Each structure stands twice: as C-alpha cells, then as structure tokens.
Image 1: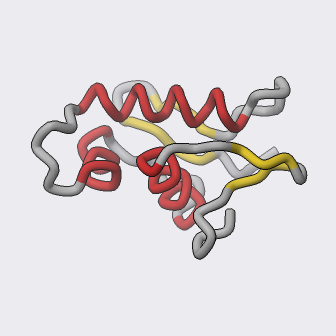
Image 2: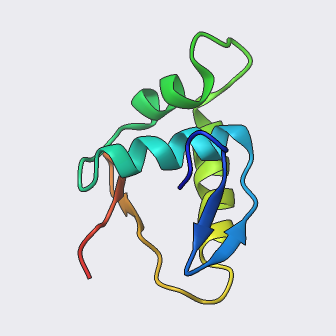
Length: 91
C-alpha cells in the first residue's frame, strides 16, 4: 500500500479500490490481528457522515475482499462471528 499515492497492489498487481475501501485496508494494515466491530469500522469509513449505515461496512468489506482476492488468492480479511472483522496476518 502506498498511502501517499493512494495506491494498492498485491504481488505486483495494481488493485483498484475506492476511498472507503482504501481507508479500511489502511486501518487493518496498521492494526493486524485486532478485531474491529462494525461500529468501529463505520467510524473509519464514514467518520461523522450520517448517510453511511452499519451494513455499509459489510458492503465495503465485500468489495475489498473481491478486489484483493481477484486471482483466487488467500483471503486475509477474517470475519469474526458476532464481533466484526480482522486482518489475519498469519499464514
């Protein structure tokens, strides 16, 4: 992830992500293995924006997973039942 250029790549392949997805990925990379609730992630993607809803987190996670795992690669974003989402940094 190149934060300054707002670009993401995986194994040298550029990945198109939207701004909310970029913020989510950046947050996960800064806090690997930590579980975040939808409410916490909602703050990351929407801040104080009132039109962003909690199910928006699920949509952004889904889009981010699809973008990152386009070639059938391992999914590092883990759903933690009844808690939220985490970046699984372990192999």
